[in-house]
Length: 195
Image 1 (cartoon, rainbow, N blue to C red):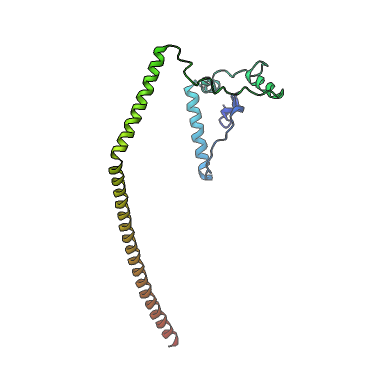
Image 2 (cartoon, rainbow, N blue to C red; image 1 turned 45 degrees about the vertical axis):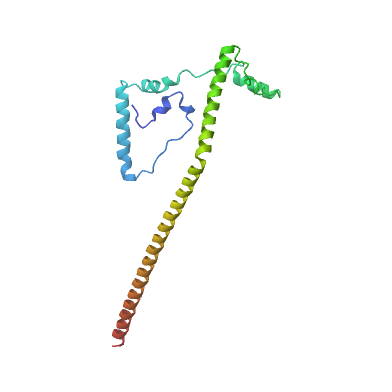
């Protein structure tokens, strides 16, 4: 049994696959170990299917079912192509088909439909009444929330500005300190060179 040969080549449907495998770059020192692991996995899969490659491939292709036959001239695909070749257009959707109550021939069905619509309208009316009753208090609460948010944001901005200013001061002091150290060291170096 040739384990370097891909099992997919024995599958009569392998030409239908239209995507490539994702492969990471493999370091040269690991390549032989990876090949061993892949061959070992292939052996295990074949052992589960009693060692027959065709059984493995059939097990994976079975859920797809039979391939549909599109070769006959009466197939819907060929009919659509023929319509386009003759310049015929597909009939547009009839948007008026479902409008109105024509589907409700029974008067009881119409009453039920209207009662449902009435309940929806009643719910919408209640929502409007609640909004009208509480609009001022809700709007004032919303404005208070916005004011609190603005206050919190300005406090946070002040805190960040103070932190940035303190960091800049510390950095400036550190730069001054190290600059004086470097000057003194370079002065010592110059003094040693002159001696």
